Length: 241
Image 1 (cartoon, rainbow, N blue to C red):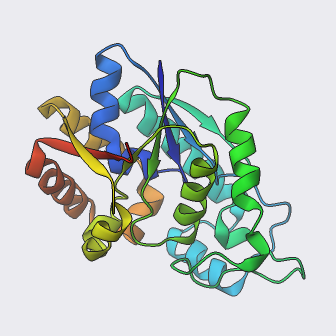
Image 2 (image 1 turned 180 degrees about the vertical axis):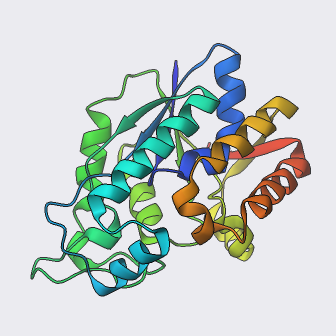
Image 3 (image 1 turned 90 degrees about the vertical axis):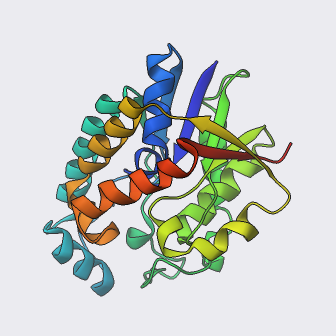
């Protein structure tokens, strides 16, 4: 049985569950991270909002950024021991609507009506690679990042058993959302070793281009992950069963 962690972006799975992934691999399990929204845009034209983000990240072009982020992800995945699979769907900051206009000038918004079919298309791409015995693990969508919402919808369209993990760092920013995201579900604790915690922190530190957007500092990232881990000496995964 493979454990397939569905990651919206090039950092989400490791930031949220890197320690568990590390321990699973060390226990001899086959673990893969499938990142959906990491494709290269067809042109280098950027919206004003996206230009600001690129300036913050120190990457002038989308190609430069995505290449750098894939390299960061490869390093992070090697630290926790997971295999990686990259899909070609675009991050929301690069997507356009049917009229050619930019769809998103902010990322914490409901999905645009023009993307009604996107979850189904992503579900089809995921399904083509799945085996009957695979265990899917998907983010809850905490924080209401539009891409996280769309990816969760895609996974649920597959109508397979799914385990859900909390979106880090959005748990720290929007803790009050957790109850609504897990309503009707059951939680199970999964212990993570001390070495798993350290590898989780080290792997998360590999996402250098993104840390300033997600945490106050690299030190704050390590501290918050440790505090999250310390509550259960691990993490919880939720299921609807």
